[in-house]
Every structure is written in C-alpha cells, then in structure tokens.
Image 1 (cartoon, rainbow, N blue to C red):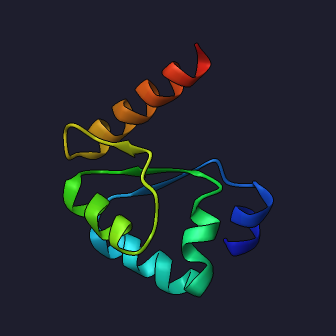
Image 2 (image 1 turned 90 degrees about the horizontal axis):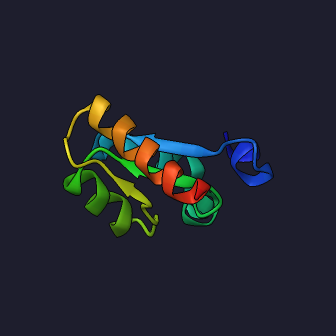
Length: 84
C-alpha cells in the first residue's frame, strides 16, 4: 500500500470508521500524513474525520449521510465538481 500511495497507484482512500484511520496510519508509520496527501481522502462522517485530522491526515470528502451509500454519493459529487 505504501508504494502504491507514493507512486500514485491509488486515487482515493475511504475511511468508514476511526479504527480504519488508525490502523492505516499505524501501518504506514511516520509517513502516513505525507503519503495520504497524495490521494483524495474520504470519510464517512465527522468523528472519522476528526480522527484523521488528529493524525495529520487531510480529509477532502465527508459524507452527509453516515453510511457507505452516503460516502459514495459524496465522492461522486466531489469528482463531478472536479470534472467541471
């Protein structure tokens, strides 16, 4: 995962809970924030977003409805805006 993030092989990372943020940050170690700055980071809601931000990870997309479909909707809106 680290090599894929660093090389641009991953476009989006989604987080569906604070524990998923913490586990990925632990796996990436000290470079977590730097590596995550290379991708679009999407969070399922404000608690998950706060966890990411506390670890220095920028969050680009936050779901309005705190569900996986809500997260997908938020990502679609985000990329539609970027395409315009």
